[in-house]
Length: 316
Image 1 (spheres, rainbow, N blue to C red):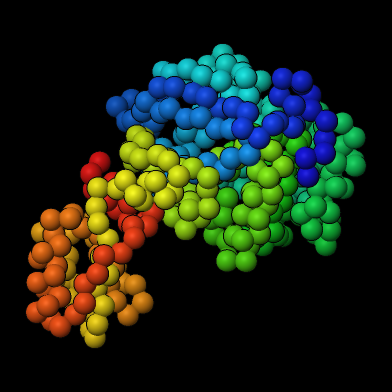
Image 2: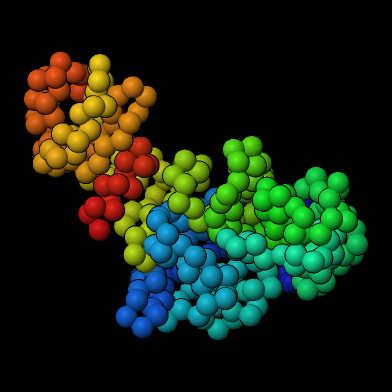
């Protein structure tokens, strides 16, 4: 729905794929002795979907709020859409699309009124046409006159995304955009994310869902405010300090407690009828011995992003 004219040539709604939209270095934010984000380096280009991955409290939301100009970093420098991260935060906020994890809708206003209010706040030209286009684009016509509080979780999320994009930003920050949604609604959100990137937007998505993180072009794994791994999902999985194994055979899952007590095992979890194991490479001999004793088969498996997160989390 990137149709509205931008308010500034410097932050126009269209950008060549590959153009740098975000470039920050050494960004740090503390709350007293608590480290929210520490020494963050991040680059994002037009056409990319970048994932911030990690457990709750890892620093994902704080990172988004800093990049969106909502929070001022204690240390660090860089630019967002060519605007200075430290000194032009008010200007940054005008030109990005930000969808918070919590619903940021006016519950007593209708769908149409919520979108019209957001369009007016951003000074969108031809707001009536823009709102009508957004309602059609996000298939909100049946609910246009319904109050936001009457919407189900999936439709409320869809309205929130439409509101975040009403001014056609080319840089979009989405904080847990599919939290609480069913599979069909999650797919719909990601279909739109992929479409936005294909149209030249840069998108940063915060998520603790590792299956969703694997859909990102690149990702950073955050733990206690620090980046412990970064790259494409395949690169993060490949570079993890661990090996994945699959234990298969009758009653393989019954051995989980014994597996977890084996020296060097980081984690194990069911996979089909078998057991998937993430462990240090030195644990392979002990695992083979255990498998042989119980007439089971142990084989190496390709590392997944979930396996890598478990390994890096232990290391950090």
